[in-house]
Image (cartoon, rainbow, N blue to C red; front, side, top):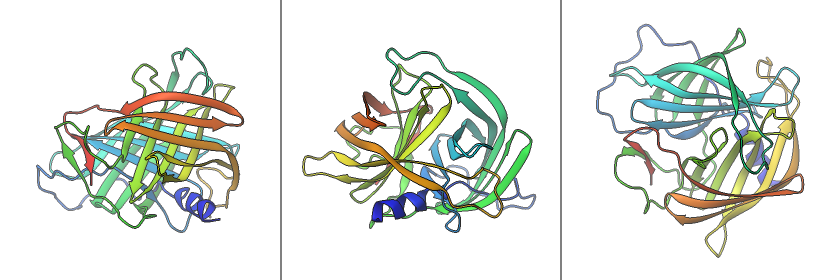
Length: 284
């Protein structure tokens, strides 16, 4: 039950509010805070937003639901910052790709479906606005807390091979188009995997409570959700189904082996932290 509750908590993550406030606060240039985190709206359960902040760019992954109620993820891979402010904006994409277990991996397709903007008021509070196929959604989001110790993240240019907190965006550099967001608090990792269904449609699944094991790996149940739409107002509760398990074995602070089973199909991948700017997040 605790895993289910944590899952439901996650699924309220993405949100924001009016785009960029005309008279919003100014922030000092040179702030080394990294707004790499999992964001949600506590009163809404079933969707979420991961942000990965490197340099003056935010890579945002939105986990929500399509008009037919099925899982849908949208990505803003290059939300560019405005100097002197904590405001980021850019194009929003939806992708299609090979089935999650396809070997070898093949190229994905992408379509611009709108735009997204995020303004971070603090490291724990933000406003997000996005447009998907002509429909605009604006909400206020807060950093999701699910563990005993919430890390603080800063941007660093040095190697993160010895960083013991694995909060970051991870991928396989030879298989562009899928990835996994990890948020670590104490000995729990909240993992969101974004990939593709056998049909090629975008698919996301979540491991909201991967607990550290005696051998140092992180392991837990994997879930999928469905039943509402990205623009539902008021928000409609989602249906949750357990679909497998996930295990992550870290060989260094920046490399790992991901093993997961989805609907009886096992996938094993080598993954590493994704780096797209000189200063990447280090969370401690």
